Length: 331
Image 1 (cartoon, one colour):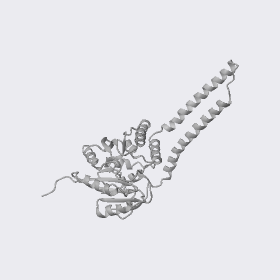
Image 2 (tube, rainbow, N blue to C red):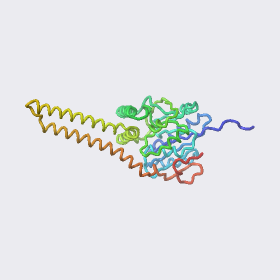
Image 3 (tube, helix red, strand yellow):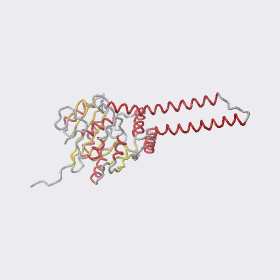
């Protein structure tokens, strides 16, 4: 009898890893258990080792040797989470692609609901955090404030309380990969490409093990990337502050002339002059820094260096150990 059933959907799962030896085995087990409940789905697990200095790479080698559905990309050094996500997307062969971190804060079981949304025609199903377990109040508050600030000043609306945990249709993935920028803010880039997008609410769990890879300094840098990559408001702010300073100066000039010409009281000089110089100097230095951030991003773009370098590939079909050019994918 001829099998007339439709071909199974291939789901690629991109899992960035950086020093995750304490959790990567459990992450693999949870994902395999979750995907075993999905009907009509074949899958590949693409672990991207972002230059780990612990035993993450060794564990990934063992997982790949035991399971042919596991693929491993190892970077030559640490290039950062967003570059690891990009590398995984570029090597994914699936009809749909999921991005999920290895720390199990984003439950793999939620992917089932994302998959159902995709089958209903949604091209991007992104996770929206209704709760954040195991995080300090300061981090929860700053994350909430950051998302609202970026959404308010961004040129495009970016969904609130979302990370990179999402499922994307192949068309959306290809559109995202057509954007070659270096300072990547993936969740903002996904919002920019459009297509039909829907939120999947879920409760974010505490880390299964290990420590966060985004301490305060990295979070601030990530927030800066999000703001500068999707908004010109900091540059426009320079003009607004310039107009304000000019208006204050005009008021000061008129006041000084009034006091000099129409009264016998002169405007005291040193204190006012000292305050004015400090104000103007501080504003100039602040906006020189903002201009420098934008200029530095232009400098990074024109050098045209690769986004990342792959040291080793394991488990990919017809793998020869060398990384293909970015954007070259095959099933």
